Length: 254
Image (cartoon, rainbow, N blue to C red; front, side, top):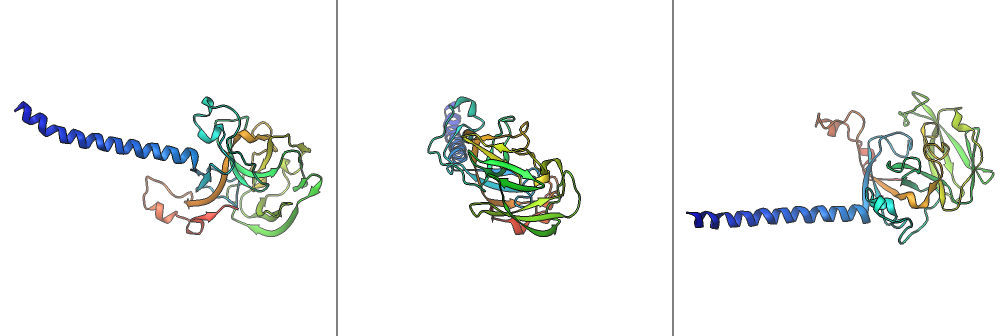
């Protein structure tokens, strides 16, 4: 009886360990892809409205700027400074990064200032190296629903950077962020700003973001995989359908 029982259990154990190995291989492959190819992120706040909405799930490519310590978070403490296969971001890229004041948190903003640039906001208008950035008023919109300083429709502008990158910004009006000192971007650093200008803690706020070192970049946002509005809840499965934003499905981030 004992030999029969052992013989019968061997195939079952073999199947069990085969399944365990399959799961481990799948997890290893998933981690490899996350660290080296692409990583998903969820947008939790409205600082990049209307480009990115709260509830967007985006894909960030890891290889675009090469590999730094924060490409392999949460293992960054084990890795040296510097980047492997590094390439610098371009002005206008929408980038996930770790700000020096809060290196354990992922932020996403737009690259506005490159190393050596002088950045200033004067009466709500962005200036780069003493020149006002082209800005066209588009009217008002309700596509920036999450506003710290305003509720309801806000003004929108199409801003075009010196290299031709163009995008829409939201502007509530006059706030403390609309007039800043001149920021001189150090070598090896970048100046980041949110598209929802009056609802963004960015490089204009040194205690929160400040200048972002090249080493702290994770990668650029490429596209929105899927998006759900704020009525969606996993505890109410039907809201995955009612809260699904079809117009943002696989939308490119520009």
